[in-house]
Image (cartoon, rainbow, N blue to C red; front, side):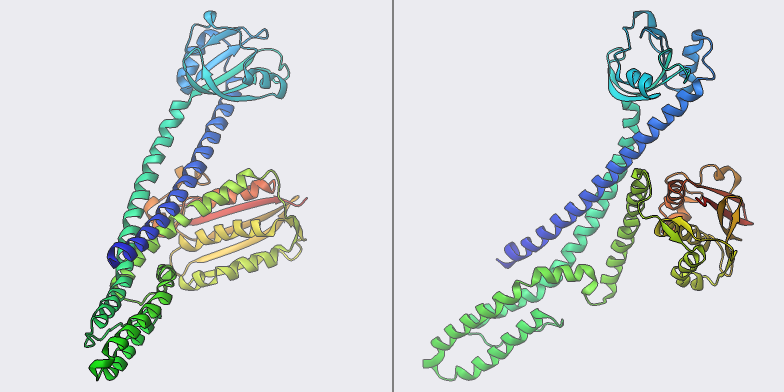
Length: 465
């Protein structure tokens, strides 16, 4: 009865919580990626359209252009008539002046839309701009991608997230069974002892090693058992004392059992005894939970950065004190790797209006990378000075460096020079992308110079005004 009720209730509650938590995490991750990838696709089409302005001279080459950029290209005349199309016979195509992307291109200088194409019979992502930005009412360039092409990439993400979800679920459920069984075992002993006592068998002693409500309950039952053995010396008192005992056991069992669910939560949070096997399972779960927690926290942070049109918490900040605080925050990691960190800041730097938390995070991300990717006993320098009308902040290290071919992509989302090494160090591939977005929010720019085995110099430049 206990196994079919209490055990099932506990394990089902645990499994539901894990499924909900992992499911929400998976959904959030997928939605963030889909939104981010769709935005990237729009930006790619926009950049392509602007580039085509310089190449569209002869409409007869429109098919070659479309194949070279792997996108559909359409040229629309002032009256809305199609002048050329890379994938269909333009002479049979209807007037396009009523298309949303064409209307917005003429009104705002650029138009974007996702809709069903009657010409190709599929959903398409459109971006349109005037061929001559000084003549928005004249010829329009429109570039388009099939949504199924974007969907193929998101499909891969679905599979990856799905596999991760299932693996995490299996590990979580296995751990849940182990934890619940560990809790249920002493409860079963208590129930078994209670049943024996109710039948007049007072020889069973309950042994519980833990120090919690369950052990207190077991000890209470043991004490009652010993007391009852003394009381039942006479046959005439046996029945009444047995009834009293059953009533007492029911009372003693009812209250602590209400805390079992809370006790399970405490075990999940690390409150169980430090057993070797338990530590091994917990470490496995902990490592997986920490890596995912880091990609998202970074994805959510990146999403917040991308969604901001401006900075809300601008205030005058002392860059010297800000860098000191960043170094202090990373002191344990610096000491652990025996690095020497030098702070080289010009005393004449005035207070600058920034968001101190965001700039602190950007500098912290650069320092964190320098610490991780510099061999033990390395040298790291944080430098700040005024250069023309800008504040220049540099993070210089003598670490492993970055290959030349990777420098152009180092600030991209999820880009890693050495993927396996980055994951081993807890990286998500989003740290430098976050730095870039924070700096861009401040109307600044960030760059890097690096040579393998020589070290790297990351430079942030912020306007003083």
